[in-house]
Image 1 (cartoon, rainbow, N blue to C red):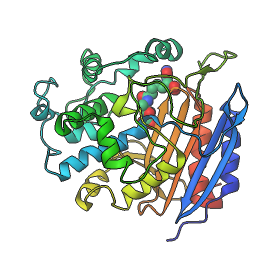
Image 2 (image 1 turned 120 degrees about the vertical axis):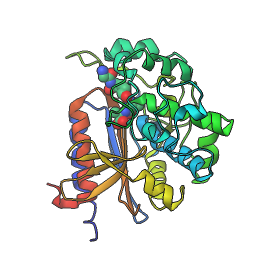
Image 3 (image 1 turned 90 degrees about the vertical axis):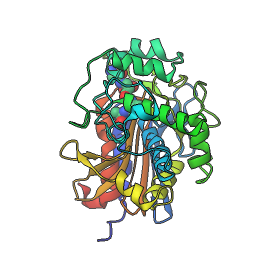
Length: 349
Ligand SMILES: C[C@@H](NC(=O)[C@@H](C)NC(=O)CCCC[C@H](NC(=O)C[NH3+])C(=O)[O-])C(=O)O
């Protein structure tokens, strides 16, 4: 059945409520069969009071995980590795259990502990402690291996950034290049994503961008400008920079089969249930909306930025939205309303 037309008034209302809830700015870009709608609210920069625009670049956090999954699945298409092989076949002795497979990493079923749980237990001091740090992949994996695994390999879904750090190690080992080169050659250039960058470990965002503000989580405490950071704590799990336009292009192209073989895209879309509205495939989330429409993409949280990037299964309608704050559950909740209006239309209410 054809989708209801995007409810742009509903999107604008959701952005307004995100700003009311504490985001300096919020924006959304919908691409519906090639027709683009851009909606913005509030500020890109609190000190200059510059207004947010849909041209502003931002840090996309875990939306990076879909980019990393695409690159690794292209390598599967090229027979460079297989999904059900042990990770240790390609990275000898890295993991303490030969039963952990490549597929377990991409579907968050490896059981590898998420080191960010400890790293950001205290949001503000945790961030300040790492914002200028540069980690090796190995150091991040070692942080994880200090803690017990959450489940036996394949036994359960447990979201963990560690999985996509190991994905980055696999990409570098199998291609002989950095993940930056792999992203650029395999995704950014082919899709002409001119606003999309992987600049780790540099802390600056190229060109025009929105500043991001971390909410310290203490009533009355001022927002922290979190824009400048290495994001070395995340790397292939969360360090890509992009724009709403490029994320719309990326998820539409992916779901239209432009980046992977049909067989591999089908693997990516083998979803296991996470909760009543969410399921996870391989680096790809499925979100079931109240109106019965399911959308496919990923969310991202990095200090200063909440990102939402989803599309219909056929890629004909895509949405990318961002609020330039984080650690604020009210803003996070308000932004989900953008998806409802973008994909369910006025019936969303
Ligand atoms: C969940 C999300 N995951 C990601 O995007 C990854 C890259 N981010 C995280 O794991 C959260 C890091 C802490 C953020 C910090 N929170 C705290 O410090 C909480 N104490 C903040 O909100 O800025 C996703 O997959 O959608």
